[in-house]
Image 1 (cartoon, one colour):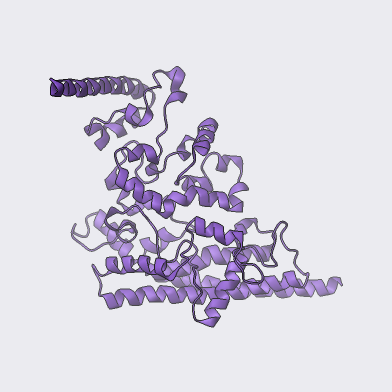
Image 2 (cartoon, helix red, strand yellow):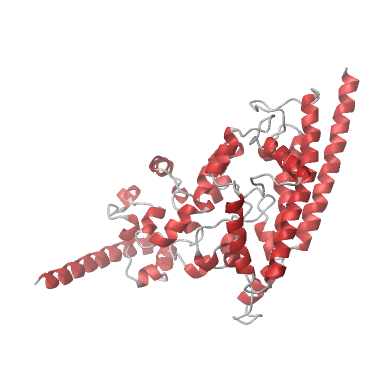
Length: 414
């Protein structure tokens, strides 16, 4: 009797769920037909996952559309607990918080900030508090609540789509996020694209972004060097250690006495850089394990070491540029930005820097340096050199020339 009641109960829930789904589909076929067709082609539909499973059952008519629940990662965790747990441990989960920590994110036009066309278009991925979710709901910025749909586009939520390198393209490309450019024209990227159009057979070695950065589908996405290619502890190489310290000062992470600042603590909390040799080595070992599926271990480690050394070389150029601009502050030739506590240029200001020379310095760090480093790690010669190292050399030449002109003008004005 007990088993019969359970079966009847399950059947009742199924019938009710199906009935509700039919109501949703019939209405939304008229108002949002593409959403319905996407859902109908999804595994959710095939598994009888109704609209109410994700959106709740409070929304019943056009008059109460605001009552529809917008899913969050926790909504997805009801069925995908393992993947959501992995996501929560990775850097993508901190994307929303990282955006809030950047000053320029609060300087965007409302159309970009509220409309998710600027920083929030990508940094919407990330965990949010209940208060933040309520505020997004209130403002109508519903696209900023979810995270899983950044890669598994709703309402198909396709795993096959999220496994393709193009799934990463929306966010990981551009002047300061050059992952797509440096990957797509590398031999890895070219082979992956040729494999997609069946020029290469299905069994060909053609690594995607996910092959290297989401091994075995692990959603804890991170890399050895972190997002700025700087880390702790300082290297034994004295020149590199000094150059890296200068960069940390220009990022506001070290004070004039090279002591940690609240900014460094914030970067640690946001997992923006590896703080120990062990945490760096863990990620490096994972990458080598992936590389040896196609290459020898010696080759893999050698290529990754070239990337490490490119960081060293770019740090040296950056440190020279930073010290040049800091010298202008020290001599009273260039006014220190308002609200900045330390006597160093703030390279995190991007194109909101107050003077052309500071803007050039910021672009050198977040643009051309990123191309040089990622081009090296991704084996993209044109990005490593032409759009990276070569442009950094040009940036430094311009910075030195601009500094000389500012000094000359200052003397004439005295």
